[in-house]
Figure 1: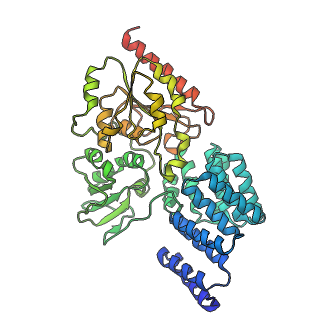
Figure 2 (figure 1 turned 120 degrees about the horizontal axis):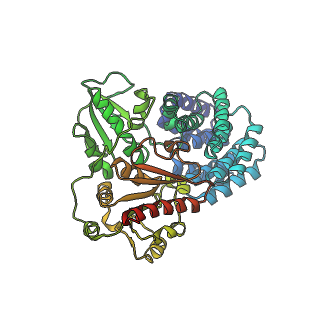
Figure 3 (figure 1 turned 90 degrees about the vertical axis):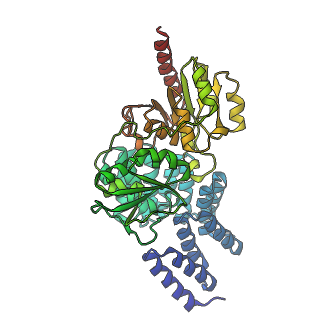
Length: 494
């Protein structure tokens, strides 16, 4: 039953709770306000935005469906539903919802903003820019549309224009997490690390970008103060590759006298344990030992005020050898053994955003014609990919034998070279010191720099091959074929 006074009190409570960071309380107040308000659309839009900001896309989608059940023409619900469908890995349904929002609300900025987000995810960048421009024209006081435009320009590699859009967005809204995130990507790509890490701290406020803050218990949040004789927990966030790449910073804290405890996904625990005998590694879900300080692993560079990358050679090691079929095959091999990783994860929303990094096996096939023994490093291979790859007599795969990253490391140890897209396998191989060739999309992730031929994080063992035009892997594979051909001829003494 509508009760304007009650609804007003609940909205006041929700605003206060949100400002204090008490998002659970804000969510409960908004849900209750929806039951009492006479204007459900703005309250519902607020609630859906709050849920999306916490990565609760399924719950936000449920709210959107309920609002559309009550009011099929609710523009904000269609716009929110579009963004939820996008994160739930249904981009075409997301596009349909965004287009419906624009059709119902051609003068509603949020509808065009949602369309911009969907089009960006689909790689339709020029259309995305036009959608964000429409949103900014309709609501020039909202920094979200400038931040969206900046993100598209950044993906296109137009870093100067993206930086200008970020600056404009931050002038309007200094706390725009999306603008800060894009500013971080620009600075980090260009090697401006100190400001880049500072902007990067806003990642936790970008929907779907990072896991929730996990400060728990009585341990104090580490803010960069002296750590000598302190016990500090660094907990993993984001992807497996991020943990493999950033765990090196734990060594810097140990050098400063800290007792470091790394909390990582279970699949990483055994391999990360080889980082340093003095660093304790605890798998997620297991009890942590007593500690005074805690911080997310990817915040350590900012808290240390790092201005450069700590470049290390082979800072991880292969765990104790397991008896696996690949050892027998490696002992009998007479050809160059090359590990291949051509695909990213297959199920998560994060993997959807990284699909441009993957290579179709049909594009990869010319490489397999070389006189090498090619070994798949994937722990999952689709039946369609397997049907093509097994036609090559020199292709081997051990997917059923790969259960954790230590197994992958064990397999990599038997190879001469790893050729991988931008995925955790590339970071693993490089961190182990194995010669690693990384195949990069036209606008690669910030961590690979801009135009470099070797990775600044792994300068002694990597070689980078970059697309010259978006989506075109042919020239990349061609360059790899030429380089591998040189190695094969040198081995043969030709």
